[in-house]
Each structure stands twice: as C-alpha cells, then as structure tokens.
Image 1: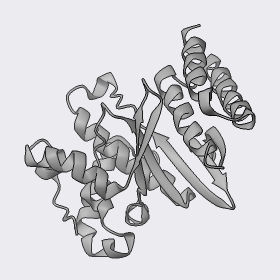
Image 2: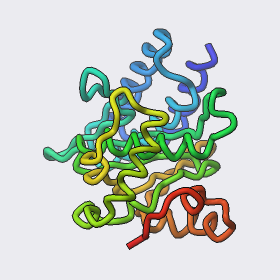
Image 3: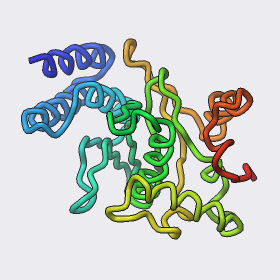
Image 4: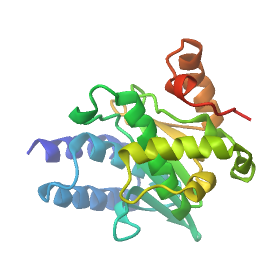
Length: 228
C-alpha cells in the first residue's frame, strides 16, 4: 500500500535522532493515521506533514495527538498538550478542489479565515503549517491584535461575507473573527523532514509583502484592511 510505504519512509527519516520514547509515540501516531486511511478519512501528503509537525513538538516535551477530535464536528490536525497548555496546528497542503478551479486564491483565503476562526479558540497557541512551495493566503486583519480589531468592523464583515461564500455550515460569526488569531506559521521541508517556525508578521513580510508589491496579493484587490 503506497500510503503505508510513504508513512514508513518518513518515519524512518524522523526517527533518526529520536529517543526510544519519542519513537514509540511517533509510531503510535503513524498507526492511527494508517487506520484512518483504511477508513478513507485521511490522505498521504497531509498525513506525512502531520507526522513532521508531530516530531517537532514531541522533541520539545509535548504530548501529541493527530486527527484529534475537539467537538462533534471539529477535528484538528495536530493537538499538543504540555503543563495544561494547548497548541493546535492545522496543516495546509495547498489543495484546491476542482470546483474551485477558477477561484483558487479566493478559496484558499476563505479557507484560512474559516479555519483560524473555528480552531484558534480551542488553543492557547494556534499555528498553520504548510510546505515551502505553498504560500498561505492570510488577511492583514489577523496581523492586528484582537483587542484592536473592533475598530475594523467593516473589514470583519467583509471577511465574514467572503467566508460565507465557501463555509456556511455553520457560518463563521463576526465575534469569532474578531477573537481569532494565528500565533505563527510552521514551514515544512517535507523532502528533508525539516521545520522552520516563523512569527506571523515575519511570514507576511517574507512572503505576502512581496506578492503585494507585485500586485498578486488578492486582498490588495478585494479587501481594505490596514496592517495596523
């Protein structure tokens, strides 16, 4: 089975510098993903990235789970717990479904907004993880401190309207958007199973600012949020 081969390969790479206890934990996560694959609940590239993220937190003393259920409808990709502190990581591969072939960037933007609003309230820290070949579409609204966002009511409504075009069951609320946050971005080099943690402003300055300068940043055309 190709899925199992892929997970075995990435685990061998990840285990090279792990201690016995962390190897056992990583293998448990691999087995969970394999079981879920047989139930057609997960996919290969996404699962590989989850394991890379899992190792990053395991080696820093965190207890880690993958495909962790938060509610009856929400299951997060990577759930980490340590000393009553919770970190949630959502892995974004950059996949766009065929029905969004003519609006892929707008779809990706709405996806990031919706995920951040829905998942970040469950964590003390919330991160998005993505491979280096994919640039996350992050609205400037999330660069503003939640305590300052009430001044940007018009922008929150614009983001909600965008979300509602793609994710309306259930809809994302204005209150969720105002409180939502991204604490950082985890860049993944899947080939070398390497991880780079970046602050949100750093990620924006390195990746999205350049797109904005080139006129390729979609929020530059359709939204009017100030960086603050």
